[in-house]
Image 1 (cartoon, rainbow, N blue to C red):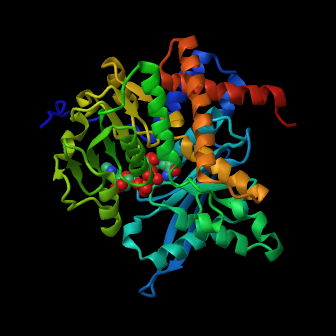
Image 2: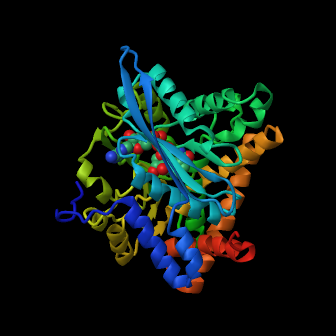
Image 3: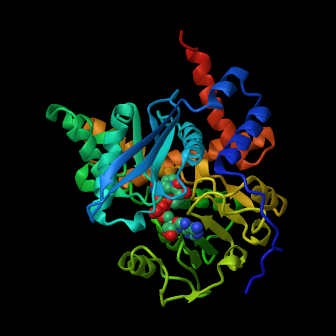
Length: 429
Ligand code: NAD
């Protein structure tokens, strides 16, 4: 079993401190215009709503939801909604800021936002979650909208939840405008105006980026061993597409268990088990349970964090033996963890590039709804792949030009686009 780095208390910044430190570093390197730096240092709008819902047992509970809108210089705010007990203003702020960089880097006509509800959804029935979602949507009111702020799925939210949001939002408007509001959210089920392929867009994009990295480095993905933290939307689809490239999934960790098998884990069988088991991997018989603390140190070539933020820290980064960390999650590597990875020569495909296939897919869903068209999955995946290739090349070029790592390359490309927009447009009045 792999050994872990010596235990010491981790220095723990929140995700907000991490994103602000990354931003400050990039702004210094590229000499970002001081006025633009001031604007981007703040969020535009922060919304906190408390709303009551009647539970199945007849009692009333009051929930707290958030929507933070960081910046909309490039277009309507865009970003996911998370249902988790770590959701608070600071987390929503950090994730909203990362969305601004991500949409800017991807060349999309969107800004950045994020939000969610402080809740553990496992404690509620499906009908309670429906009422919570609908009442949250109602509480947000016209602070979201198809040309203002367009939520999407994130941790513990899915196509079903997006369908409830779209239906609630549209139902509060005149029936004559119902279909003009369909694109108030993306990530809807295909039958409710969703895009074929949006379900897999993020994981597909993570693997597209891994393929670009492999080509760039002359690395052969056939037989390469990889591990994935998180087996939800991003983790499963990443595993699915990477196995298709000939790579071998040797370990998976979710909130309930860590599984390991050197012969390779069958991602499809694991998905079926998890769906039948309340989305939990605990008890799966096709692989052995493994020490969670030793997960990151497993012998493999590629590590894919696809769960929460701040998972790779100074406590475990030194144990990572892989050549590549592909950030499926948002903010999975903290500042100290990143410094250790860099010192050890581990490549990082940064989150704002690596998982941007999701928001690119969302953009195509938004366009499809706006144009009242229906697109085919192959066409969608090809468009996502092409956009990602452009972003990847931009990141590598900026990194080379400034002699910096790929995260800074990605930041510089994103911030340059925002800076140009402010320079061309000026500031009202
Ligand atoms: P999800 O809810 O579908 O899955 C989350 C997974 O993480 C689950 O398997 C859960 O068990 C696991 N997890 C939670 N806490 C954990 C812990 N402490 N240790 C180990 N595993 C844990 O969420 P998702 O949509 O797949 O999102 C995962 C990450 O990817 C998030 O950081 C999210 O912001 C990011 N992301 C998602 C999308 C998208 O389209 N869904 C797009 C871009 C980025």
